[in-house]
Amino acid sequence: ATYNPKLIEIPIKAGCPDGGIVLDPFIGSGTTAVVAKQLNKNYIGIELNPEYVKLALERISGAT
Image (cartoon, rainbow, N blue to C red; front, top):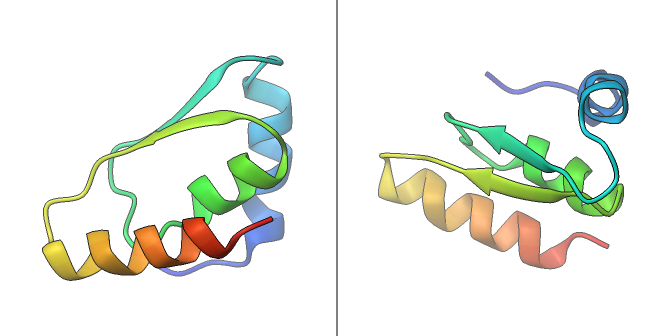
C-alpha cells in the first residue's frame, strides 16, 4: 500500500531510538526506508518482488 510519508514519521520517532534499526518486512516502494533515512535511522527492508526492490533502491538512494 502506498501512503503519505508523514504517516510513518511519528511511529519511527516513537519506536526507534537513536542508532536503532527500522525493520520493514514488506518494503514495497521504500517509503518507510526513505523516512528512516531522513530521520538518520538505520533500516532493513525485505521485499520479494524484484520490481519493487529496484523501485525502493532508486527512491532510497535519492532520499536526503
